[in-house]
Image (cartoon, rainbow, N blue to C red; front, side, top):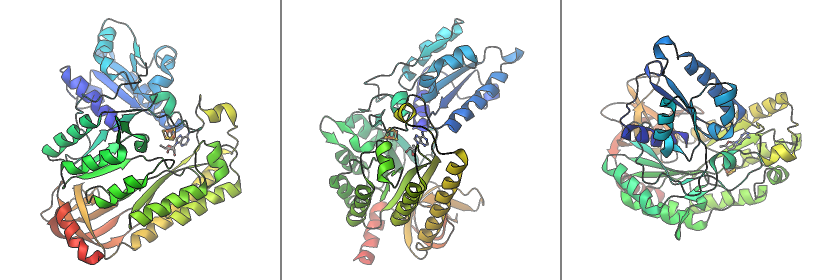
Length: 441
Ligand code: 5AD
Ligand code: SF4
């Protein structure tokens, strides 16, 4: 979401005639796009800001430092007054105001806009794409969140949930397709509650899949409270909608889920997973897990481990609980699981996930996947990497393949994090879907 926001800010700055600087040291203006989700994310920002402040030397007295995003909204006074680390502070709904705010700074004033909006979706701003090698792109379809999970600061920093018009989304995907992009990831805090004048998320996904049958569509994130069969069916039927669902459980214990204000039980979550696997055979699943939430007992922690072992996630993002001001958990519960217990539980969770991932990856050996080449492997420049439809990273010999190519790859080896393979032939989503049919029959 922050990458996507930075691309919007980049577009606003480019329209004003600014150009990217080669480095922070040489820049006239530095923006730090911030995240408040956990304390360590915020700590990194403070360190970066101190460094950027130190760049304001005699030679560079006019260097402007701005704080954008969730932290701006959360702790604006501290940046401007207490620590004097920033000249301007801009919340997630105020990016359009950046040119005015920069003018204020030029006049020698501090500038702040952290007003949250009920409507802003930046629908008409064409993001300047800076991530993804020219073949993959993010498209933000909604902003904010109304879910109010008790641990989470997002509803306070990003405001109310609002959906962008379906028309502007489809148009953006069309432009990406025309410019040669091969994969779009549709983004929102909870895409399943997308709604625009009667267009549901399932309908939006269907329309997105029709833009170009050789363009992959991914989406993130889905809340388990509302995952309709209609959406599962669209994913299953459209070959270019990826068979991969990020469906955060957060905990495997119903009591903890209740305290987290996640409106489902362990059993309901597990039946949803069964339903997903029934309607989309071979679907890959990933989750977010928070360990050491207020009042979590050893038994409740064991329930999270057992849930993970039952589901066998292809990927998991795992965190120790980090108390955030203003949240319900902060007001109502005590952050009473000691740090060392949180750490130990987190490493148990990570160990289990690594073991499960390795087992799942072992089962991939011998299978043929369609891989979208993204770039050169970090370890070996004679190899390229890319992801399967199920979001697994695969590395294979470069040969004649380039970013943006779809290649049928046979998996030959694995680790817990990556698959290795041998390229068979260049293909496309529709061709590969046809090739696969006899094998599936
Ligand atoms: N502490 C730890 N993890 C958190 N997340 C959200 N808030 C917190 C918090 N206070 C995690 C959740 C969410 C992911 C984006 O970040 O797992 O799904
Ligand atoms: Fe935070 Fe819950 Fe909204 Fe996700 S759904 S952003 S965890 S409040």
